[in-house]
Image 1 (cartoon, helix red, strand yellow):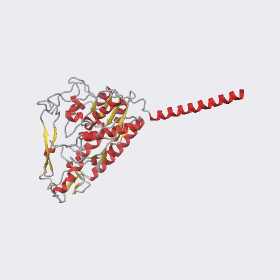
Image 2 (tube, rainbow, N blue to C red):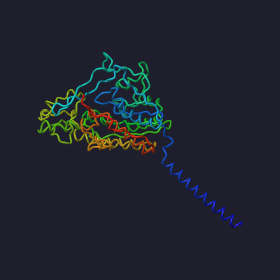
Image 3 (cartoon, rainbow, N blue to C red):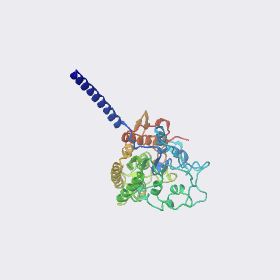
Image 4 (tube, helix red, strand yellow):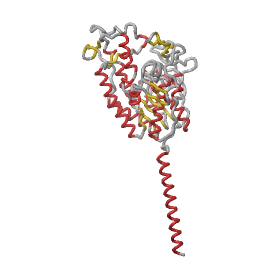
Length: 416
């Protein structure tokens, strides 16, 4: 009997060992598939520049703010426990904000573009122009014009009308870092640093690129503040300057106007232009004379000005710096266990096209669907695709299950 009991005990022990082993295995599998318990979407804050703010068609206005990629991300976060995401919208009767470009169709193959100047929020008689104040909470802290180099500058409200707009009239001047310090996010996205290179590119090399040491130091300060209470998030890197129509468009169009040689002024002197030199869209699109475009710069004595061209040497400088800045961004994100959205690869893929759920887009001007009329900022569809890139990066890194957007529900450039 004792031997039978012993056999029974052994069998029971073996059974429990198997059961416990299976239970432990299930627990182990579940743990690896679970969302990181540190991820809390209750207070999502977005950090960045004009792309983050929602600038589109060379303007910031209520429709563009609502279609900004952070607001689209926030809508999806709500489906998995996220909180409200208040926006700094313009008041009724001022919903067109700064005003914006409108597409009126084509004159032949030339786009007909007008500027919407009604119902703006520009203070009457203000010189330089200022925007009427916004009063209220705001979690999209994307700030047009913002560079990594400027986040610790106390004078920023004096030269950035968008930053000044959200500060009380009599408030002490604060820095962008101090604004972020008060935000206390539980989760964030950060896409900042583009302008530190792009300002150089769009000025034809006239404005300086941010010093690498300053870029690194300010990025560290920025991410330290955002993660001070344990917040997690996603950091996006910087796109290649040649990935946007604002840089490439005129050089693409020029052969349609004239097959003649053209000449450019560079910092080394005047020379013949090549397909590695990019003719730049003027900041004021209304000043672009398409009738005289084909003949411009066809004489050595009257070249395209240095400020009107991003020449091949300047392209190389911008691209080299972008790679260096992206390495810094990746290293700092990795050091804090943050997701990385590879905007560099994403924007480069758009050159040949991206397809998502049957929705095909490219970086082509107007027809491509991604870029708005200014050639640098996104359409509603472009914001939807970009929001999905962030969501996919977050889901992959943190093992979350945030639903992506149906990009077919959002519009590209549409004639009014």
